[in-house]
Length: 410
Image 1: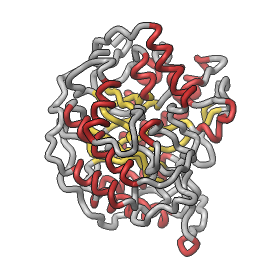
Image 2: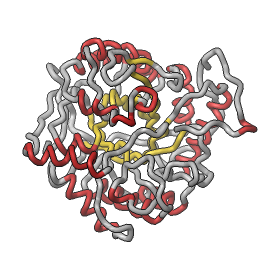
Image 3: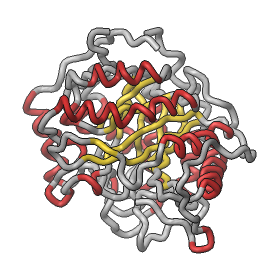
Image 4: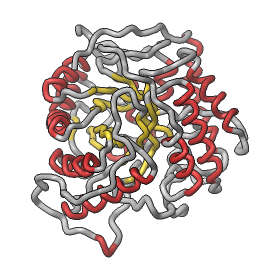
């Protein structure tokens, strides 16, 4: 896929940038990603906590990686995604636990069946990797990183269901950083950036090949790495990936970075992990929430955003969540109406701004999406098993939105 130069717009005034970046940390609105869990912002190619299986399902660890997906039939999506159609999707977060191939097949089919039941046409498979610390130069698999072979097995089952697939490595803060000291993936500062990018490129290489072999549509080369955005080393890394993977290469920016600064990344597409805070009461209307989102988006540009995908959207089903939708840790009183109304509003924004789609965060690979979450232990952001939110998702995915249309040739 050829990636041509695309224009970027100027940034916001310095005072505003300082306010946007600082306020979330002071007021607690910055997305907390510690749970095991531009007017037209196009991008420049320079120079061109998961649950464990239930007791009766506990698998035996396997030493050998499976060689391919199971062939058991799964239900098919309503209509397979084609370019120009909206991506109606869910983020599946997978922390591998050395489960047997049979268990992987069973869980992948369970998740695929659930997504088909929501009328989704897309899935993004996020999985963790590790670094040695905030200033470390080394990137490596963790004990929860699925191997390329096991990843291929799960992707094969998603393909059997007709789902558009995205592969999305995600730096595991809990395993890599001192989160209590305020460290997160967006503020890592490798002591030697060249060494870090070389290590990251080596880590990604087999996953790019797997993505090509399994006909993945999009490979997200990185997510929420605010401090490394625009680094010149990205070009070599993306070029290397493009030699093995012919599909779309993307980058997913955190919402604060998207709003606050110019993002220059040598990729085909931008996603936003969109946790825009809207400081309104719990009984706020869909219209009020839509207006709140548009206030944030309009700081970059008004009108259509066909080159933007909401790569993550979600909110806790609890009181007070609109003020900090990315809070992954707090457990206030359950309020399912808050969550369902937010989902409806986000879907309306996606359609009105002619975006390319939305992926809801998230379902853990090992969970049963057909079971209501245990609110004593589960994240309030869990939406699977909450009927009001599930209905909002179904209404969104069957809304009739035709999508942004086929993107211009790059």
